[in-house]
Picture 1 (cartoon, rainbow, N blue to C red):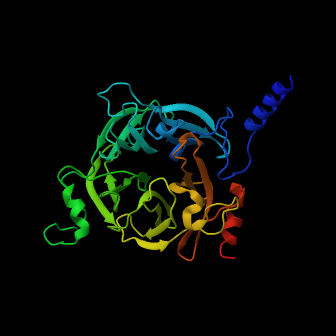
Picture 2 (picture 1 turned 90 degrees about the horizontal axis):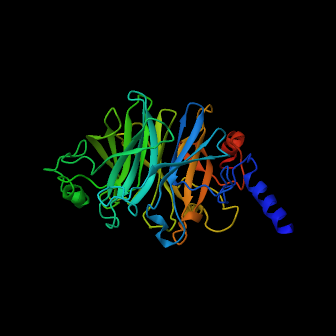
Picture 3 (picture 1 turned 180 degrees about the vertical axis):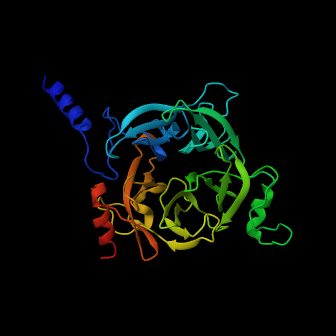
Amino acid sequence: MARLLLTLFLTALATRAADCFTPGEIWPDDKGVHINAHGGGVLFHEGRYYWFGEHKISGRGGNSAQVGVSCYSSQDLYNWKDEGIALAVEDSARSEIRKGCIIERPKVVYNAKTKRFVMWFHLEHYGKGYGTARAAVAVAEKVTGPYRFYQSHRPNKGEWPIGYDPDTVKDDKVSLLKRDHSKGQMSRDMTIFVDDDGRAYHIGSAEENYTLHISLLTDDYLRFTGKFVRIFPGGHNEAPAICKHDGRYWLIASGCTGWDPNEARSYVADSMAGPWKPLGNPCMGPNPRGGHGPEKTWGGQSTFLLPVHGRPGAFIAMFDVWRPRDPIDGRYLWLPVCFEDGRIRVTFPETWRIEDLDALANSVGE
């Protein structure tokens, strides 16, 4: 009887309503289970937030796609309802999203013209490791899915970046760009951004992760237009996350060290086409739980910059703390963002609330 009472107590404790963020801790959903939405992004639609992410399983094989893409919903950003699997892997050996492939960093946007929800993600075909480097897209009529796989791309096939002349540029940093020109550019870590004018952009790691490409998508958000720019060739950027604030575009990314954390970097531009200005590490302050400090992004890696609905200028930086030996135990760092002296800043409070954003922003640099 005592054990039963203890179990009931722990279950009730795990499922009680949350009223703050506790970065890096177990984050239970409405069923009391740690949220399983890694490398994800959040869409606000008709009064609710929808969090899409990689569904992981335990063990070393858990980083391959054994289930698909998860979806959770929330009204307050603290408490999340499990909406099930939005995009499921398939058993067919002919399927591009065959069980055991790699599906990473899913992002969902809504297309107001087609009235469809569009999911983009990084896809590696089954058994190919990280060799196929494709950008893939799925669509749905309902925000929670089910999403139907549409197609995958090697972006901007046969196209050169805006302002680039292959006959005059001899820089050795373009060798990979030229190598992939005829078959399409690589796409690994990625995100999607919809601007105020409704135009959507795919931002992805290309050229063996040496260079970020920012590509304009077609009006239906399903394909590439062939218009793209390269930013910081040879800079080794991945894990891009982007937002727009005060008419400027702000980008956070990471270096390339596999599953191990490294120092984040940030950039700003007046246009998606650039030029982009480097701003250095956006992370400030110690890790309140010990462990890695801001020089290692507190053990995390960027995935999304989340605008808080109804609070203009308020953003949450989403980071993943990867656990490659047991991927299902990966943690989330949702941290407050502020903008100060022409820079984007991220801090790490032990606990915090959305209402604290203004005070936390004012305290930066004190």
